[in-house]
Image (cartoon, rainbow, N blue to C red; front, side, top):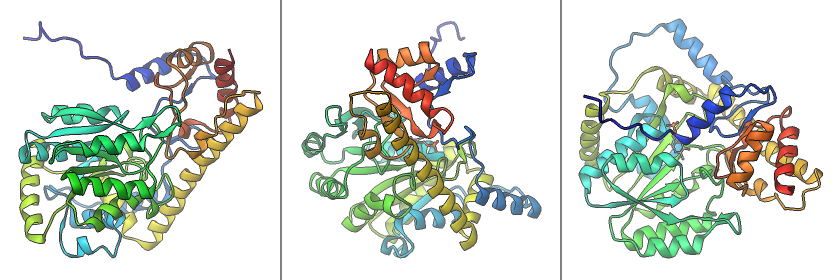
Length: 398
Ligand code: PMP
């Protein structure tokens, strides 16, 4: 039965992790991952999460099935973070939110729902994008193309190219937009550029799908929701996938959500009914634990404050690593200006290192990065940053 099954290509980042794990050098550093590590190189268990988990453990609640779209308390908490507590959209009942299996699961159910809704639409993702965007929407049956995004010359966004491309798209085209902390480049749109994108979507009748996997990692919870706010104010209908993997350090619990902004409460009810069919045939209903922990933290003013402080701590540590890396590379006598790393936002930086330089980092120094030159700043810490800067200096100088 399986004689003709071909070996699937290895996931490039997971492949990198395997190579890293097999490396016996004690000085090795893995900058290829998309995970936040603390200064000791550990994935943190947030104190707010710990407190909520302890309370849950003590309460020992029963483990019945959840509603297909997840519990009301969780979905409302998601809406408050994305749309704000004083949102007219949520007050009017126009937003459908369903708990999902992480941000990936949210994109998956959103993709499946869109395929039923508009089977002949094309999906457009940024060039470059998180590699799973293409795979997820192709798996949902869509043709996926790139829109211009990153400008290697300025290490920022080629906004003119992006905008003119979007203006040429057919009505109904689905565009996936990174709401903040663009993965993999770290280059985000300005608020004014977001406002222009909203107008292009209106003018061309595009279907915006915002992917918010890093809320709180750029400026803060409210500040990072600027794209969602602008789309909300526009009166357009749109999708938002969101994730707590990073912001709650709950990667393996698979906690995320899909939110869909509709035209009316009545429309929202119909959309939810169809979305529930998609979920039912995928995994029936979401798991309890991670979502319950998030809802408990966000539902308690004390735990919420604790979480926001911890999130700010993660954000600040990454920023410190950004400026520390730039300074340390400079101190090595490198003429090339790396200060763009400070401007980039979120966990990642497109360093501009070539595939050959990345290979040298691995071979000679045991420093692992993605071949595109993407590094995860959250994997740097006070102990390894000096060695990383030295190694980068070596490969860019020679
Ligand atoms: N979107 C983007 C842009 C991401 O970087 C990620 C995580 N790497 C996700 C979605 C998926 O998040 P999750 O781990 O919650 O599925």
